Every structure is written in C-alpha cells, then in structure tokens.
Image (cartoon, rainbow, N blue to C red; front, top):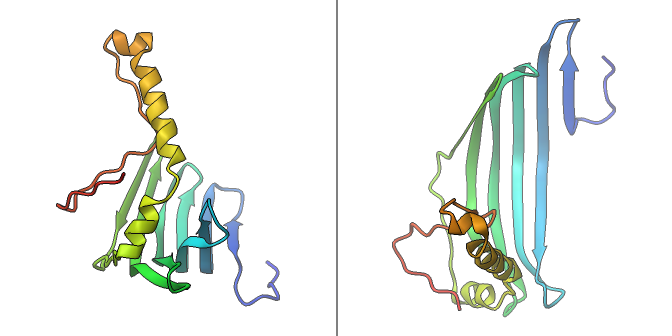
Length: 173
C-alpha cells in the first residue's frame, strides 16, 4: 500500500486477501452545488455539505456502515446581492445495511432543522419557471386518458411528490 502525497484521499477502497472482505471509506471536506436561476445569470440556491464521512464494511453483497455530513442551504437574495441561510447548518447521519436482496437506509439528525423563510425567498420561488411541474401535470393528464387508467390500474404522476406537513397552507400561483 503506497502512501499518497496528499494529506487526505477523496475515495479509498481496499480489498484484502483473496476473500470477499471489503472496506469502503469516503471523506470530503466540502461538497458544494449551486442552482442557477433560469431567467438570469444570478444564483438561486447554494447547497453545502461539509465534514462528509462514509465508512462501509463487509462484503460487496452485504455492506453495513454509516455516512454523515453537516449540510446547509443558502438562498441568494437578489435585492441585497448576498447569500442568506435558507436552512441553517445541521448534521445528517445515514445508516446503511445491505444484505443479499435487501437494502436498508436510515436517515436521522440529532439537530433541529432551522429554516428561514423570507418574503424575498417566497417571491423568488413563486417567480421561478416551474417547467418540471407543468411537464408532470401534462404526463398525468395523458396517463389519465390511457387504457391503464380507464381499467382502474394505478399510474404514476411523476418522480417527485411534494408533501406539506408544516400545518401552514402554502399556495403557489
């Protein structure tokens, strides 16, 4: 096993001997993803995950372990041209247990997830172009007229379902 000249590796995989024993380790200092607005060159959201750590052990068909990170979501306030926190930093832990023909994932957080919803955030979300939702509604309309829907079979309306459990009615126009 040769030492890297870097202090930490992006991905580490080690298989020992001729058996099926496997250890997978992933560590990232920061993972950042910026969602741009469709109508302008301004950013909209900035997702950050720091202290990303994942360790899985076992064999390739039966791994178990834990992945964790500290994540946050920032919103670019175009009125003041600066980032504002939409979701404050919070820790997330995912437990993984894989057995042959069975995969169990469990997500948990020891933190309270604190969100900041401002009038500018709501305004900018409402003004977004919701093409994905329009396409989903068109597909739903087409599937309702399909032979499968007329025969009583269930059909999918899209890959994502949004559920509001906040207790506050939210209307997007």
